[in-house]
Image 1 (cartoon, rainbow, N blue to C red):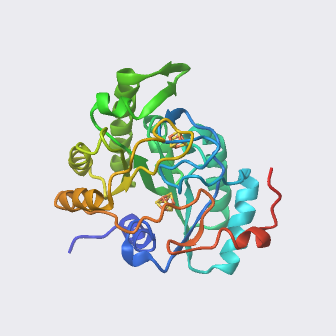
Image 2: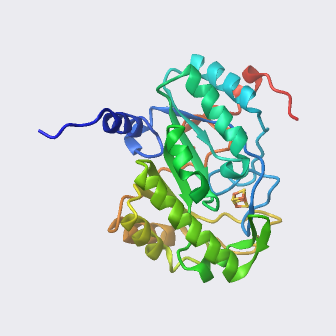
Length: 294
Ligand code: SF4
Ligand code: SF4
């Protein structure tokens, strides 16, 4: 009989109770704590006054919390919502560009709750720097947005990226993004973190390249991919780009399902989402949380 380690058992429980990693987990709730305002790239489908659309619904603005406010919100919601199993950081900017806040929030919550699942979504640029630290902080589930594995295609997704004090555009930006995203995913998988990959599909740019991305991340040991339509946001560079049709999205997902598991139940959550995937309570909880917008 092979011994199942406690860590493996814990990962299995956490994944069963994670509504985004497992469609049978829909009765479990997650809370997003918006502690990460800054971003280190400019995706062409993003307007920075709104939440990061790599994980969130476009056109929504979340109020930023300090780590201490994040902890209070978590504790208040946990009291009302016993099915709350996951704490996620999904913006409103890039989690790893706000590392100190993210780290102290996770430490504060962990001191109160040894069991809750920590989840984070990232554009992957700084992932090689933080992958092992994330695992040490007991972040068990990470979502990486990886829209291309070809640097030339990737470069067309960003107006610019900022890395180690320099700005890059075009193929150079794409080369750095892809190298760091893939290295970061490797390090996460090697540290035992479950990785979900979000792919934002943009007509005429990466819509013929999605299967290639899925094959690559399957080989890297990722758990599931979430293929999304780019939804054009007013004021973004891709504002005029028509989204791929639902039919094309279904076709791409079907094709990719032959390669690895696909997520079909993504709800494009807000960066301050609270509740189960189908019953978001963030709006009605606003009063209860008694917050003044800053
Ligand atoms: Fe916007 Fe997210 Fe891209 Fe940053 S990573 S520019 S917040 S979509
Ligand atoms: Fe994690 Fe994304 Fe689910 Fe939020 S929506 S809990 S960041 S997988």
